Image 1 (cartoon, rainbow, N blue to C red):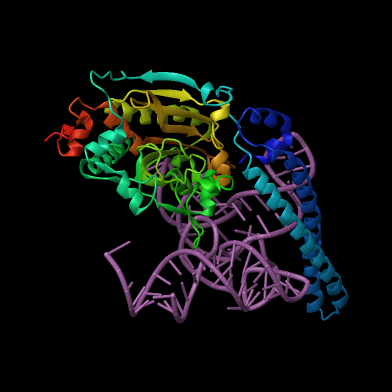
Image 2 (cartoon, rainbow, N blue to C red):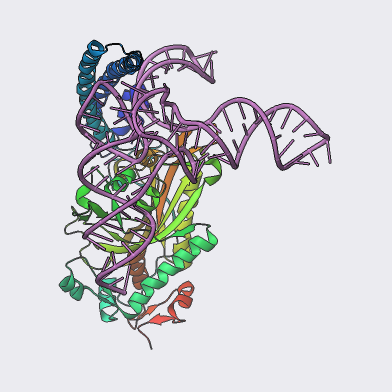
Length: 426
RNA sequence: GGAGAGCUGUCCGAGUGGUCGAAGGAGCACGAUUGGAAAUCGUGUGUGCGGUCAACGCCGUACCGAGGGUUCGAAUCCCUCGCUCUCCGCCA
């Protein structure tokens, strides 16, 4: 959510910046008028309330002195009715204004390259050697089926399409990766481990920006008005919703493993094979709460933490600075990390690291005070995948495949795999 | 799922219709005292919104779990919901 005061002061400037995004910003059109109406109504209603408070006091005095107050009471009755009417109007205006503000995307940071779509994202760096195979390489969906470490058919029988059973060393690999990632972030990168709820309420989804615009992307528990989390970002960021943190609290850094649930509405036909796009997948998430002046340095730090995992696993990747057209709704700046997938002969997103500045903090009302008597300020929030586990499995399977159909286990994972060096070799 | 109790400021806790943003205490901050500290004393100590100001600030308004209602006036009375605790049931 943007600051209404900024919109008041520089509507044209904000409109200019937002127009470079690939987002609907028509809500901007109504903001000025609604804001003006709102302030006029507030002044009217507060003036009446002030009067009512004064006169109510006088009525109290009169009653004590046994004077007749019926005339004044009758008059106040009208005033109260008027207040009620104006308050109702105000409530409607504020509802519209809030909705408009909640549907306006974040302002891109000045470092963000201007561009239309994913073609215009800018590669910042690339790491690692892409493997070359002296044999015919296979896609991970064929390898996992041949190795009998994942079962897509039975998952679609039991649930539906875009679900999977991991089996045997496949399940073990998934679990090993989760543990390796969590251990690394907690022990080496200084994050506090959190295991969050997998369902959240509507306020939480609104706080991080999934709602109100993207309700169709989420799975909903209708009876409770709960949502299955699309990422641990939602519960973890909302942990501090409606809180005022102290100077010493910041920065806060959490890492959380969770299953993630996405309806993938609008993605029909994309990545239909394999582990790349599932309705349920595992992810290790990094979340940071920082002071405004630190957030861009912390974005670099957070991104490097995600990169560490890929480097330790020996998976080639590149880092992209996402352009204005591909930034998404909530981010002010975003790096995507893409891992090399031999079957795609291309890089595929495996992590997305964003600085939201105060966009989420304003929605979720997460503030801090520099000193006891300082004014409250909004914190900056950041998050990134560290990493998407299913896609990491796919990348390992494909990049580490051997001529005999087995898959080598990266060195750092072997302790987590009971010392095994290969999947598919006895 | 059933029955009961509760939800007040950073914390504890008083307050059952008007003078209550809210007693009292603790904590915290600043000041006094001290060689220094403890103790003591004094002062201060929430948030949002609107207006005003160059600014410190000032004025108004709202907030006692959330939302509605009654009333000239609600922390206080009524209704709905949420959460916490206790007991019963069920359950991993």
